[in-house]
Amino acid sequence: MGLPVPAPSAAGAAGPGPGGAAADPGSLPRQVRVYTSDGQKNSTGTQDASPPVPEGGAPKTASVRDASSQASPLLQPPIQVKVKAVLKKREYGPKYMKNNFITGVRAINEFCLKSSDLDQLRKIRRRSPHDDTEAFTVFLRSDVEAKSLEVWGSLEALVRERKRRKEAEIEYRENLFKNQKLLKEYKDFLGDTKPRSSASAIFLSGPGKVVMVAICINGLNFFFKLLAWVYTGSASMFSEAIHSLADTCNQALLALGISQSVRTPDPSHPYGFTNMRYIASLISGVGIFMMGAGLSWYHGVIGLLHPQPMESLLWAYCILAGSLVSEGATLLVAINEIRRSARAKGLSFYQYVIQVRDPSTNVVLLEDTAAVLGVMLAATCMGLTSLTGNPYYDSLGSLGVGTLLGAVSAFLIYTNTEALLGRSIQPDQLQRLTELLECDPAVRAIHDVKATDMGMSQVRFKAEVDFDGRVVTRSYLEKQDIEQLLQEIQQVKTLEELEVFMLKHGENVIDTLGAEVDRLEKELKLRNPEVRHVDLEIL
Image (cartoon, rainbow, N blue to C red; front, top):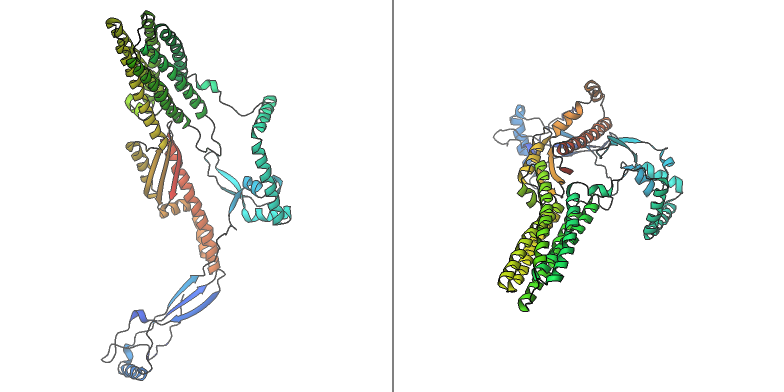
């Protein structure tokens, strides 16, 4: 913007003569013009940074400057005037929601409207935050508020309707059991059109199959071991019976955890119920420690303090042999399942077990390993008792089985607690995710990277991303007609036209940035199927 240069004053400039000093650029006058969004100039002021002159020294200073001016009239520097156009800041207020968007579901629920009321409002297509849809329809919040006042007449009537619906919702929740029963009868009568996963199909393959096989075998083992203990009175046989009972109960708990873990996520549990397997395994570990190890130790100590003679151990040996075969078969089923799953994940057998990728199969593996070792230990101690006639060996066998169960339960409690706390994924896997983001041209840097193993091969990834604004803007420009955009720029003549132009394309650039975030999230999930939830924060 060109401005006329005012004539220099004698008191405002001094040449570099003998009686004058060089002009200070910081003391040059400056003009600031403030414009509102409608292009009108609000104020124009001139600020002079020169210090005020005392009254006593004014004549003397003026005379010196006049002399200097007369001595060198051709060396006077021109006065520079800086003009800065500033757009007046708009006060939006703490609760500015005029341009907020709202979905149809929220409009119906929060403003007590019907779907037919929304048909009359302006519809805006926006980029969808969900993976299954490209775009969805939203409404301006101001339009929805105005429509709700038109429908209900006043704000007080709307508040009363909200209160009435809230009370109805509370009453519905209080009678939830009755409503669920009626809903079930309604579905049974008309049929359910939604596909439902059969609960029995879960136990026909994978960890469910391993758990069901273990329940059947351990239940039979408990029954026969209990008969052998009643017949012989052996402390080791009693420990083995308690061991099989604990295994049966714990594996029934695992089956419950598996059936609950496949439930569909709901608003109260948006990330699903996969952790139910870890919770069931943790409770199973505590049950093994209290029920299995505790009772085995107790019975072993009682046998040492009050030894009792035992009957013939022939039937006990036969039952232990059968138990060894059955427990070994279950152990082989668990080992084969873990090997298959570990091979699919590219892990070794040891890594798969230590990382608790499948807590249900881990519990069966460890319980059956302890069962096989316990059977061998019990048979050895009972054999020593038969050979020597000393019942203390049998009691020591009971203590050994209890110690074995205690070690297994401690391992299960530790590993499942670590899994429930939300541990990080392996460093090499985290490095691959980080490199995928850093190699993208739209990303300058990433910070505060966190990748949490949510269990059952599900990973939640979070990072703060510093995007390259130039790449994002170029991505937006590549989708525009450059000639038309140039014509729009050439038509901008006033400040209000400039504001409209910048607001229009600025919002589109922000939408492009959101699309870049969606693209990165999809690439992370596509290249790493274990990553189910991605949270990218923009710096």
